[in-house]
Length: 66
Image 1 (cartoon, one colour):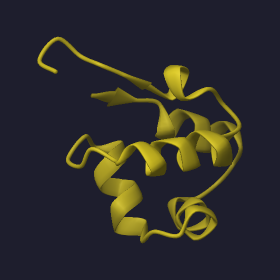
Image 2 (cartoon, helix red, strand yellow; image 1 turned 30 degrees about the horizontal axis):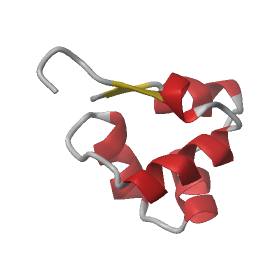
Image 3 (tube, helix red, strand yellow; image 1 turned 60 degrees about the horizontal axis):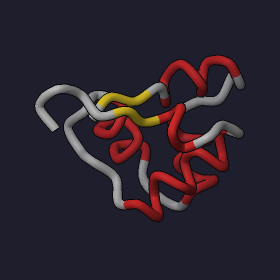
Image 4 (cartoon, helix red, strand yellow; image 1 turned 90 degrees about the vertical axis):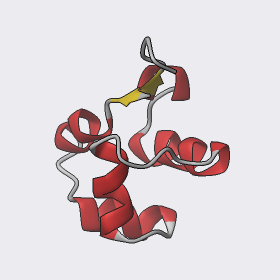
């Protein structure tokens, strides 16, 4: 699954640590999701979209292997 978390964090001038605190996870979790090494739960995906003020369908897209 591809995501635009890093792009949207940059748009809001938000660090990984700041985003992690808002949604209640560690910075390492944000890093892993951004790098595609961890697929978030549906609840976590919705929290990320809300924190970044974007639609979940914009933030996450399936790639060909999903």
